[in-house]
Image (cartoon, rainbow, N blue to C red; front, side):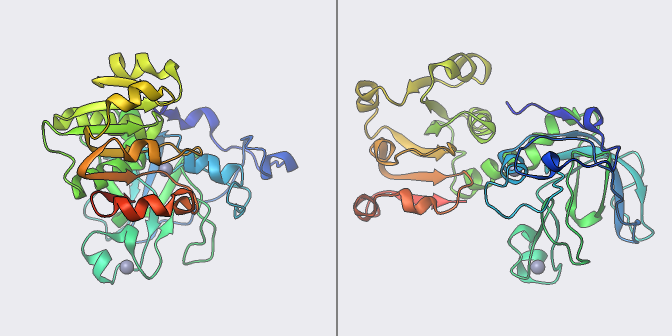
Length: 308
Ligand SMILES: [Zn+2]
Ligand SMILES: [Zn+2]
């Protein structure tokens, strides 16, 4: 499970910088900055918890070579409303709320009007490392508070533990959305989950809640205990065990691939039933380069490949 991260343990207190903190070292250190003044439609959220997601690692370590230092990571934000603008009616001071991966969009297109702001063709603004409409660089949840348009905040049920709510704001919804879209919530169907990091563990938990039969694949036997006894998966397979992989041939209705490290697709494709679905659910540039197109050509006839 992603470790929920108490933001007050790394509150950004000081403006003193050190070159190492502002490069790809990935080392975090105190940093002082100001949020914008609260606008009529804004709320200010005192951040109590923030998840740790691979996206935070990407930006702190400049893995995509577009980090805008100093980076303030964190896009699985949970906290308490501490101030509301004059037009805000959905939230009041004291409400538990969450902020996820984006904090702005045009609010005037089909996608925005359908609640799909993250797909806004006019420019969704990510919560970290992005240029907002006012020209500032967005700074995320590893901080003491955030000011955000109420549109991009979500109510968290009273008494729901904020530490558990935080990881739902990115890894949770990233898995849940394709599972619902592709009808992976049918009890009795079988799901393979590749990789047991932040996304993978969410996939197992959702799948078990939906009543699926879940097999976890990992290169490391060390994940077995967590997969079976903590998360409740039905089966655990070390993916390098060719014999065991063979026994699962054409046995799965769905696969969710959440392993961001380099790995081949082919050994898993053969585990899908006819009309099975392979969902690629990790963040990597050009993942399609890794697919052997000769095999995809064959597989297209009988199985679906999807990416979110
Ligand atoms: Zn829009
Ligand atoms: Zn994320």
